[in-house]
Length: 371
Image (tube, rainbow, N blue to C red; front, side, top):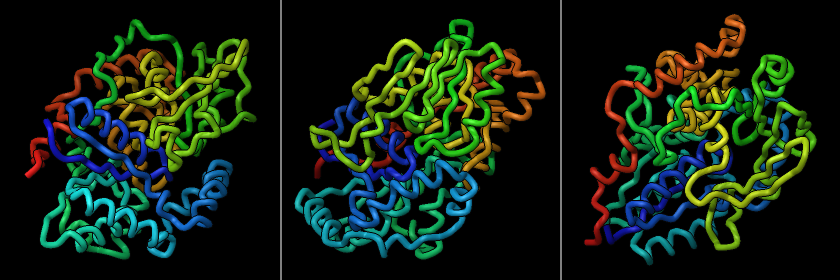
């Protein structure tokens, strides 16, 4: 399909609003549709951008603080670099950009400015909600701009009233590995920012006859032993800094085993952690947006840790209700049994309803040919 370019607007504040955007871009590209992915943090004032690393570290070390911050609305407009935004809007207008998908509420202020600039020409914007409820950027937006979605399309992956999956973001074209072919391993992580209670579970899981693949937040956390491997995104990588070829890409990564440490380049069309999770029996993690996508696409069940914010609480309830996940405490009561993992794997494999690919759903609604 020749024609227009779809602009995918991500945020690096949580990788759940970054990696799904790149997966969507990859799916469009496979259909011959051009895309550009952009990251909101690139359009913040420099001092605000510099401060993000401090927040990230604080939230990693203090999950209670992170949860308090999730409840505090923030008007992001005071942090934006309007000179850079204006250059972006002029570039879009020069190219006649019309199709946008936003994974973060923060972008809507910029999209509103662009919509005004383009009048009377219409633009099409999908607001893509990758959680079961509004994540903090959407909640803040709704507080300061209650009718934010008046001119745009609400694209929800999940219907929490019906406890159903509406649309899926696929990761790989391969069929998920059958449960019997999987390694007796668990992936343990704290999402893109290494948040939550995951580290406290490692000692208990270590004695349970499962090998562990633990995603470390930094070098200090990586303490491999014979049964466990540690992995991490390359610490030098940053979601809002473009790669050498001027693109936002999936993160390069590092594998740390007892014998050696290996660094790997980013994968072209998906993120490295998906491949590790695809071979495991379960993912032990908080129910973030990216983790749900990995769980569904790889048919790897979730052992649910304490959620971050009310949106992840809704994610937890959805996965539990569908039989795709179980709370860590409940699994502990079952003595960490493999059988329940197998049942949940089959529940994901045999899930009812249409498996509607979000990108197909988009293409069925939006004409992408020039004209």
